[in-house]
Image 1 (cartoon, one colour):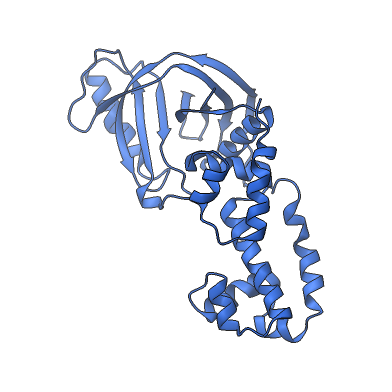
Image 2 (tube, one colour):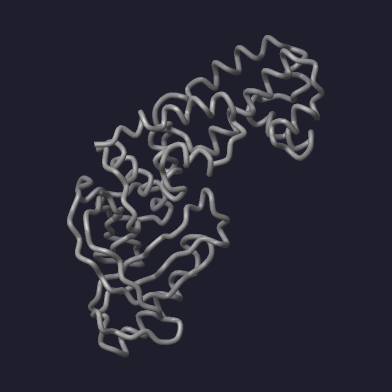
Length: 285
């Protein structure tokens, strides 16, 4: 059993001392792949690593405004902003006033820090317009290996899927293969990979001797132990929070993430109204 909080504690302490570290470096310290690091960190710390880095840099900037004579421009560049104007805009969002006014009234720092203190505690709530029903609690299952016919989609997650699903269904129908399972495999973390470079494989399970053709390729996902959380999705905005919840439960259970893929396994779908009965699956050891 893995205590992820214990594993990430040195990373958190290091980040508090130096919020300018790269996500690659932090992930290496946590002995996690960059793909898994973001969600595991968020589940443990209650905020994403990038958000924590920005918040800590902003708090450091506020301290410098109060207790140093450095210029606003110098502080802005140290905080990672390209200009004092961009820094001032972000500072106003965070502290409710301009850097200059903040510096002139040092008494504000205590008030603002107490206002922001809750960020360190617990998980942040999700903002959703709809709820998604839970079919069952997260469980671990032994899954068989699968041969998949797939079409690769490169771009922001969730964009362009319908057209690709239509083309893959047409390909499968012409070969009498529409009875397979539909699986979406995600290869990148959108928090660390530019959206236009994120890769999704839209897949349908097929017999092992199936031949690919044209844009339809074949791959095999390994069998083994997977953590599985099943949901009824009624709004597409629920997918991101549900993935984070799924990873959070893996972390809470102390399961070690494996080298296999993370994917969605669809049991049934309906478009009008939207009702996706889907299991979120992550390889674990």
